[in-house]
Length: 344
Length: 267
Image (tube, rainbow over all chains, first blue to last red; front, top):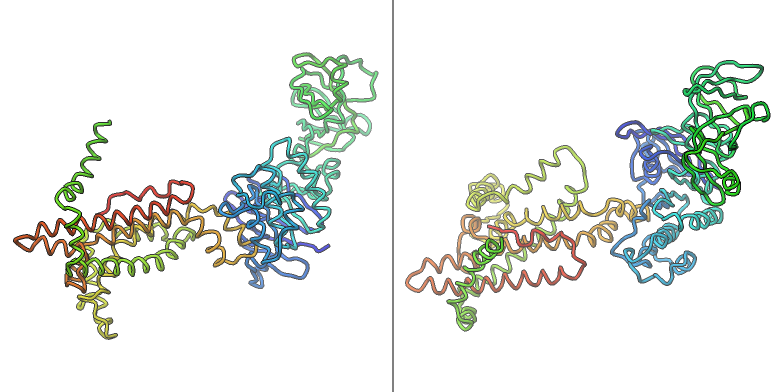
């Protein structure tokens, strides 16, 4: 597969976007809104000119500020799917899809995205899911060499989203194009991409396979963004090989990671067990947090339970067996080896 | 509130009613057989058509640039474009003479090129274009600004260059606003009086447009007022037909509030 190379600096209002990225396969950029994610796509597509930089697909230079090369967007062979799809409101579905096809027939695309029956309809008559399929069909009918997706799932309701996410993952695998997508949702990124980059205030904090970001988050932001608990405290060398962390609330936690000073204790919800009672020294888990049960949120067949400052994920059956109810007292326990320490 | 609305409505309509109350349809039709009237009508329509073609041809790209490019002095440029709107017609006429007249700033240059504008149809066209174009341009700026920038970006990434993007995306989406602006501009140009009479004069068959002919007739005793009335009725019919036609054309597309200037008062 070809490799898209992007390395540039673009001053934005509050900070400068600085990025060096090689994309082959699917890469997802995640980050909070305002992190500069969309600007990355716009630079690659040629819609925004960075102050300095290089954008190239293998040997084909689309932008090289040093050599004063800047290919206009229409000659970059880039397929950009906009966040709200940017379908042409005055054109039918068929005319939208045919817009970039250069006169080639588009029936195959209408078929493939199941929008053949909508060929004569106008965008305002379509549902969110249909619009997304039209936008994808229109982009692919242009025969791009690189695919850029801006929040491809954000405009969809929760029900449609799961289904579309699955379809999209399959489509991306099938297309085998270098693809860069941006999203604010880590789960979407993990489901769609081979590699995930966390972008905060214009800089890439960490880039790696989704599992690696979860296993070894580089900092507190990456950890909390991937869905982990983050407990703030002060680390000091404890008994044996363990590090003891005094939390802000006064509790002590232990971690197998080494650190000193102000740290964040990272623990994923699925590493945390929940119990109604606690017998000291009867558990291999060293860390115990006693707290009130806060919210209980069902996610598929699991329940996310908040115990004091910690979110735990237990099966729906366990939640029922324990008769967990908000307001009651419970104990959240997790092993020292289930934690990661990140500097704050 | 209803009383105020009724009063305003009556006030706006009453002079028109007054004209038609004194002109029978027969008299109105009879006007069309008088050379002074037909000459003026033909001249009005011809100069308006040429002036509006120029307004569209030059005003559209100018408006698009002002709407889409960010550059230093842009807001100043937008204000300057609208300036002729607030100029009294007499001032516009003096300005045109000072600029393009025989002894004007460009007069010598034009004379050297063998061009003399005084008392020609070209002078009428210039006067009409000068006073009417700002109405089109400012409405066109608003219409172009209302086109979603993402649609333009989408067109570009789909392989369309700036020109193709303009004709396939921007123009169709701004069409309603442009048509509304053009309707206003045309109506204003057709009624143009002050700048034309000063800059181009009032020569029957050459520079005497319908409004000028009405004024000329009005000043000619003893029956001037009655013929001026009949010609006024004719001008109302022509302008009204034009406005209705444009309205009908505009109704084609789903309504968007881009036509809000259509009935704004013009001098």
